[in-house]
Length: 296
Image (cartoon, rainbow, N blue to C red; front, top):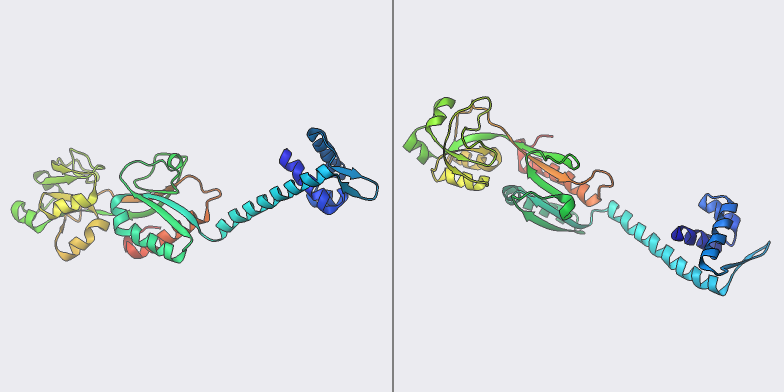
């Protein structure tokens, strides 16, 4: 109420009229007059001397007006600064992302975004831990798999199919499975989303011989490259090795669950320009970086 009354008082002084101030504020003249009277009563001073023709500030009123005017200028400047942030992406962008995605793609994409928008600064944490964007003040949390918190906004960035892969050295020692059922005879490298008892083949319960489990797809890929066993790897992490022959894709008829990457953020309402611009930039550039793995 104090700030509203200060605004009304400032407008009255600058318009030199209750009537003109009321028109500018879209209020009744009687309301403006009453609010000024209440303000004077609350402060215990007379701010304005009124006649039928003009208004004149008292000495106390003049001092009060100067302070109120500065407050209004500061307020207008603050509003302008906020609106300016919405016109041009700027400020600190805080992001967390899975380690592999960050290493393979995010660094290049974010670097390109910051080159295009030099007013952006960024803090990035590559992590496998669960991050609460509201609690930790993070603008965008990227995570594998659909988030469980329905109060957050989740935007799917990509889907990466998975395939069973093994190194030529492993296949030379153990042979290649010819059917899905034969996977039960082979050594398995498993990721956290995989069952510890069964191969991650949709619609079938094929027992697996778990020889290694890990929480990092790059680690799983490297273990497969070294011949430790067969791993169900996302294409985004295995395609270069498959193309070079360092890994061999097995059983293309086997249906495996895909890996999904989401961008999670607190609210779509009043979304800052820096977040909106980066998400749009990320999606546009992932289609180049990841190619056919991206799904709209």
